[in-house]
Every structure is written in structure tokens, then in C-alpha cells.
Amino acid sequence: MKKVFLTLIFALVVFSFAACGVREVKTPGVTDTTILVGNAAATSGPFSAVGIPFNHAIQKYFERVNENGGINGRTIEWVHYDDEFNPELGSSFIQQLVEEDEVFALVGHFGTPTVGATHEYLNTIGIPRVYYATGVRVLFNTDATGGERASFPVQPIFDAEGEVMVARAVAEYGVEKIGVLYTNDDAGLGILAGVELRAAILGIEVESREVDPGELDYSAAANVLVNDESIDAIIAAANQEPAKIMIQALYTAGNTLPVFTSYVSADATFIADISEQVASEQFNLYANAWIDIMDPEGQMGFSDAYWDFATTVDAEWAANAFAMAGWIAAHFFVEGLKRVGEAELTWDSFIAAMESEPVEIPFGGIVDFANGRRVGTQAMALLKATVGVDEEENPVYEWINIREIDDIESILGE
Image (cartoon, rainbow, N blue to C red; front, top):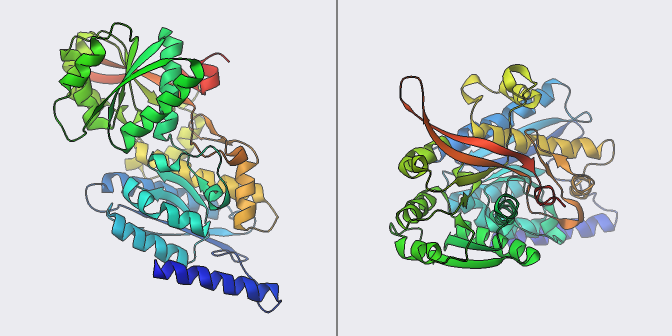
């Protein structure tokens, strides 16, 4: 806190000198030929499987930009630190990036622990943060002001996804009452908040039951929802592991209603752990998806945007979703720089450029930052879980895309 306070005092002194014509204030990290940006991410430890490909793709994107002359005569310099997914270490590195390295922006602000620990500090500073590798709900803001406007979440925030879940349930099943099993943590509470927000708008009734993400038995809460005959669909509002327990509990309770869960579970390994429940077809299981790399008319069925990514990153990361996320982070930052154009590059001009019109996600959908809107993407596809077998009778676990990427208004036909 003392260091932050001294930094703010220093900033005020510099501003005062500039006002008197004694000293010119320059935007941190910007020279006539370079722009310095960075992040702290877990590139060692259990979460290195996320951080390594994520940072690799950011760096590869910037290298390609630099090889093509940079942006408006400036190349992008990239510095990053390994925070091991530790909030104390992450906070220290973020402060170092801001106050000692003096980066222009954080690109790919990484992980729930560090993001949560530094959010208020960064809002106070007002430095741009482009893309967060987390859906933590503190990022959800429909009317950002002051330093909050420098925050640019891209991937779905749990609150926003909860709204999408309700829209999908209404569009697919015409629900009038929806049940929610939710964990009492950031993921569950965020999804629940979004569900309740969109349900209120649409006049949908919500019946919710709380569970502890650390518990292994959700049968009591599941039975309450399954035995309520007025409920038309159920949302499993949780991260991957508790969501599996929810689905198993709903299956055991005899549920036959459709179940919707988060995009964080849209991976084949998730289905593998609940294969018995999915294969039974006792109920349909759905998840959202915000990235789509397919194009039936593209090379081998993939989109041009995907091939652009796959031929730039190292081959081992060409099919890695976390690398795709890093690529998107770098893309969003560079798009903001391009929009500033020949104008002076400052935090204010960059923020205004990002808000000027929606930014396209390379692999589908858009994010609109206009009028202080900071909710990440709400344009998502709908996937259905399936279990099959291949020619050798080995199990095949797949999420099948049954609805293309759409925003809430399009989902609801508005």
C-alpha cells in the first residue's frame, strides 16, 4: 500500500511540473519506435499447461507484427514473469511491470488469483488491461467509469455466460422456470447472478440450490430440483470438477430435464469422466463455446483465421485452446493500436479506440466495449455432449456443435 501511495504522489508531482511547463509527461512504455507491454502468468507449476501456450501465442503474434514493420512505425516489446499462479507473487510482478518496467499495457492478464488481487490497484492506476485469462466476476461491469474503462475483458465472464444460458434454455426448450445448482464460489455465484439478471428481463422464474465446491455429494440439492415438477431445465453453475458431481447427482436423482453447463467444461475429458451419464441419454447435456475454428468452405474445413494462427505458432500448440486464447489477447491489443492510427498514443487514445466500435474475435463473435460496457463476449455457440465408439469399438467423447455462435438477441430472435 505504501508503494502504491508513493507512486500516486509521484504521478501528481510529475503532472504538476508538466502543468507549469517544467516537465513533459510521456505515456509509459511508449517511445518513437517501440511499445512495451507485458504480463505475469504461470509458466511453471500445475498451471503451466495453460500459461506456456498462452504466452507463446502472444509472443508469436507480436513477433509477426514486428516482422511486418510494427504498428505505425513502432515495434512491440514483450516482457513477462512467471507468477506460478500465486497471487502474492503475481501482485509483486504486476506492480513491477507498472512501476519499474513502466509498460504501456498488460496484455493477457492471467489467472483468477492474480487478477483478483490486483484489480483495484490497476483500476486506481488506470493502465490498459487487454484480455483476462479468467472469467472472474469482478471484471463484469456494464457501466465502467474512470480507471475501470481501461479494463477490456474478452473471454466470457461467468455473469455474462449465465445470461446466455437462460437465453439458450428459452430458445431451445421454451422454459418458464429454471433450476440452478450453483457452487458458492466465484464461478457459481457469477453464473447465478447472470441467470437471475436475464431471467428477470424475460419473466422467467428461478429456483436455485447452493452447494459447496469442496463437497463430494450434491444429492440433497439435486433431489430438490428434480422433484420440482414446475422446473423446465437445469443449469449446472460451476467449474469443471463440481459440475461433474452435479451431473452425476442429477442422474442418480432421475433427472430427465436438459442440463446446461459452462464453457469451461466444453472439453472431451469432461465427458469422459461422466460418460455413463451422457451415454444413457437420460437427459441432454449442453455447454457453451465462444471459439469456433471451423469453416466448411475453408482449407480442410478450418477457417482462414485458424490457419493464420496455426501456421504462426509452434506446431505443438496448433490445436491448443489456451494458445488460441493468447492469440486472441494479442489480436485485441494490436487492433486497438491500429485504430489509434497516426494520433498520439496515450492511455486515453487507446481506450477511446477500443470503445469506438466492436472488435471481432478471430475465431468467431465480437466484443463491444462501447459506453463503458465491460462484460466480455456474450456471443456463444451451443454444444451437446455425446458418447460414441470408433471403428475399433473404442469410446469417443465429443461436444457436437448444434447452434452457431450468436449473441443473446439473435438467440432469442430479437
